[in-house]
Amino acid sequence: MPRTTLISPRRGSASQWTANQPILGEGEWGYESDTGLSKIGDGFNAWGNLPYAFGGLANATNKKFLETKDQRGAWLGWREAVKNMSNEHIRWLALGDSITEGTGSTGGYVNTWVHKVAANIRSAYPNVTGNSYNEQMGWLPITQTSSSVPSVWTAAANGGSFNSASNFGLRHTKSTAITNGATLTATVTGTHLNVWWTQGTATTAFTVKVNGVVKATWGGSSASVSSGFNNTLTLGSSETVPGTYTVVITAGTGSSFINGALVSTNSQNSGVRHFNAAVHGWKTSEWVTATNHANWRQDYTTARPHLITLMLGANDYSSLVGLDTFKANLTTIVTNLRAQTKPWVYPTILLMSCYKEDYTFEPSWLYYEAGMEQVANEMGCAFLNLRDHMPDPGSAEAITQGLYAEAIHPNNTGYQRIADVVTELLLARAT
Image 1 (cartoon, rainbow, N blue to C red):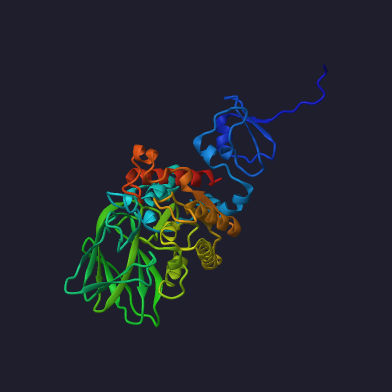
Image 2 (cartoon, rainbow, N blue to C red):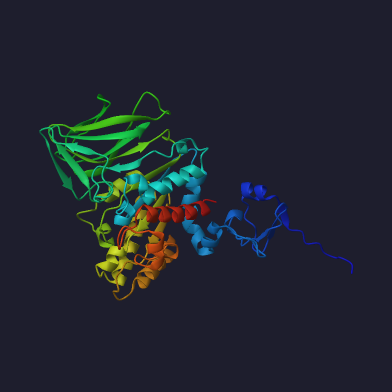
């Protein structure tokens, strides 16, 4: 029988497809000439995010995170940030509750899922200058609410005093007031230190010493309480070679409100910066109030994140917050976040639903999961249901795998699982 039409698919080696990451048209066929495997395009997923066709084996990332057309627009901010990572920081702000803070982990912040994900993203892009050192600390809050994630800062009165303020601070509800020469001390490793503070009508300047030498004097008074101030200093003599330093922040004669610090390595203009703004036990209602906690928006505005992960809901569910109220609060939070960022970037907002806690309230947790996904779809946010990847506390699977510290919070192994899932998703959405 004579051949009248030859249909020839696009072809190339597996390494060529991986390097170029083309987007095949809907129904277009791509062929790996050295493996014999093929993929069929859908018009919007890049090659790496498509599963293999005709019985080929897709990797775990492709199986779990095949993108839909409805979700693609939600990831544009993240994609642009990854594309420009060599010239500008990727700034990631993690909002949430005790699970985001890392309660249940041991060994400090390095075993929280937020820190692990940041390190994983740096490892995936090793040629970007700011990603050369995965040990960089990211955000170091002055006050840590979880006893299992102790603060790296040591407070000494030195004749002064301390108190906490709950209405401002990058972590939403924790800022430490040091007065009359009191000090905060931390040992940090990196090249640069960025200190965040709050000014008010009665605040005074504070000094920052590095290895006993005064490197900066910041702060002062302002006409009204205003949060989100920050400045950066070089820790040592090199802008690029990290070292380990003792940092001492000393109050003046009055109060200085110190929120925390960001430690980075060789990354003033590139790479990944991460901010953990989680607070133990907070419900969605605490993030929408217009009074006591309104100043967190000022810090958020200064952080200017490209990516926002938002994992709230477990405490709404366990505190019997109504489903409609929970959804309304989420909608308000997303609206407020976007209102603060429009002047510079339209961020990717990833709503994350955690696993099911050991409660049997009605309506069940499944409705809250569905409610979060509904808000994500209506507001153009991305959505990740961790329950698809993490067995519930108390289940036979969870006990066998040893994922939880107790009936609610993961342990180090569980946080590693969360970090692996979030990393896979972010890398799958990077192109």
